[in-house]
Image (cartoon, rainbow, N blue to C red):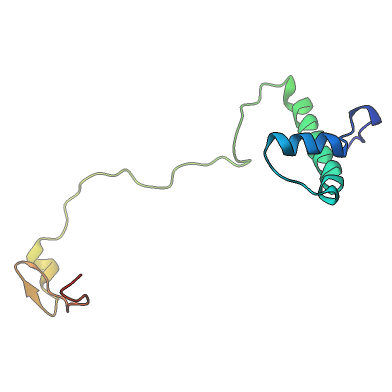
Length: 106
């Protein structure tokens, strides 16, 4: 990674201004700690921009090709109600009958 020159170094004042724009209060120690960290991030973004700048590279959110793994949502035949209810311990009005778990006030 290329080192930043003194001309493009972020100062604590630069970070304070960014914090003010973002409406984030930063302490003096946070400003001094964040300045070099933000500088590394900016250098990394610049390197990526340099590599991808002239090439015909499509933007992507993931390094590996991804595809949808879900099947299409379509109506298909299912079990008849009588067959689905055939193993149920209790049936009422062509539905599974289950014990009440909520009180009357629910």
